[in-house]
Length: 128
Figure 1 (cartoon, rainbow, N blue to C red):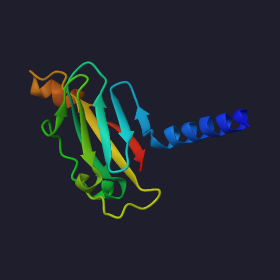
Figure 2 (tube, rainbow, N blue to C red):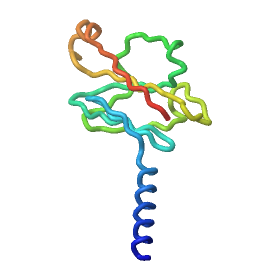
Figure 3 (cartoon, one colour):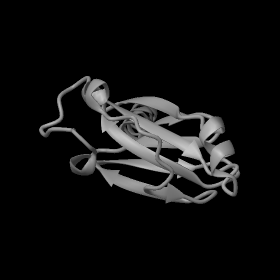
Figure 4 (tube, one colour):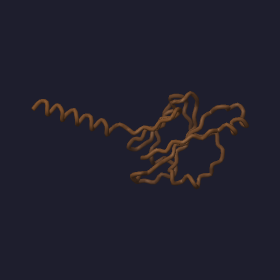
């Protein structure tokens, strides 16, 4: 009887801990964690990054001009972005909703011409 109860307790703890852990997406510079009400973006690279989060359905209507400002994160810095603050995302959030996290680095900051030519926009599709 004790063994049966112990197995049930261990199973319950494992199941509950698995449900409470956020889903994570990662590439060499950015980690994105999906929580119940917010995304957490962490800069895991070596330099400053700038980021932009948008509902995937709006990608075709965004004016993709070159921009160098906006919100940014230093190395190992994190930010939580509430779903209600994501550009174009409408609540209630439906199953299968996807947002895009775009980011770019701060390399070649001293020379704007070189910076424009070397700007590499990276993206991560995130399922909510």
